[in-house]
Length: 377
Image (cartoon, rainbow, N blue to C red; front, side, top):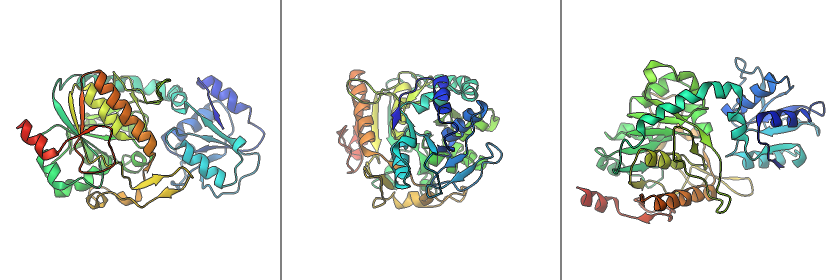
């Protein structure tokens, strides 16, 4: 059951109505889940712990709460607060498969906005977002490349882009041992990925040493590194979920120093950053619309697709193996994001081309990478 709650106070009063009926659980033990847990604790609402299918440890230093699996023994009176926007449907499906009644599943249409109103978050993020302003129109009228981690991505293509401005994301570092190319800008957005990789200081240091600047969500665990002088090229943006009422497409940010709109894929963040920086020609490469794990409508996960073999390699400087990090994809949501980007670009005189070799993304005009590079020489 989905509820439309506008503000933190309204959210707290709503949750209070469930006190005394059973245990209260927060679904998702990531950064958003921890913020909700802290909000409940600060308002003296008793809650029993987290429910999460990935993380199997105690957050003793932060919440002191247990993390339960979906197969744990729950009562008919227990209620479950879903902490994610992207994975809300998946979480709901897993709860239902665990025989939790729909009336006990609390899903909120704007949970991210509620979390961003939490005092602990508000006091912390405003100044960090403003640092992004240094990039505004820095590349006015120039071209750039946004690189995805799809199966079509080839080392030889990356080598051709060594002198170009490029955006890349997530586990692209798995290819660093095989190419001299490095991205100008590196981005990470997904909760599971950030929790797995960016929690280690040495990982962050390695990633930042291989790009000019990195961007991630202001509400991820990297907030602990914001004042670290060694990480001056790490920048933070706020994720906001909002769609156009008429078209249903995601909104597109005009000011990334205030917020970027989320739509389930880090590519959408990179597109907004590229436009904010002033690029007028944007080329997509390796955006296949193929994923390591695909979340299906019936709640199951399809593992038939896989990343390029190079991205599965374990980089020596990083502790976490890439193929242990599953980022579930909602292809319909991603396609709407690309449609929104195309619509915004057309109305602002910006050209976005798809230089991916094959793949399933047909929203943008296709071009051949080799031919385009020759024209630009």
